[in-house]
Length: 152
Image 1: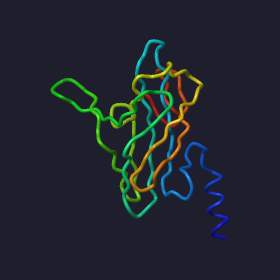
Image 2: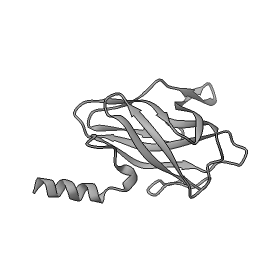
Image 3: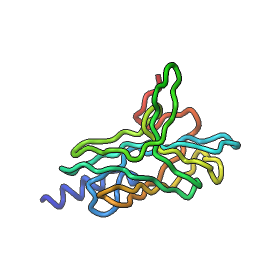
């Protein structure tokens, strides 16, 4: 019975939400937005859910769509919001890390080509404990919100 429940739970997850192997990590609602034809950078967002009793850390990300990929956050300096690279992103035990516009995110620097709506970008997340997790990131039209995200 336990195996059947696990199988049904796995089958109910969207394909992009499955981490490799028996990893306790799930990647939910990954997305990036299309970029202008001349853009040299884009960003990717997602929620990383950790079902393990121990914390993990996202150490870096890699992608063939960009020459460099960095982990970033947004901070306020006076009246100005600025992006800053961070060395890692903590994913708490039995918790989640949310990468969203205006906060933590993955920067795709020196794009090889513009990100086009309808395409998918392959991004590999590298975790301290879970290792490498491949994610297919859908590219949404510029200005759009992923399913479940409300625009204000």
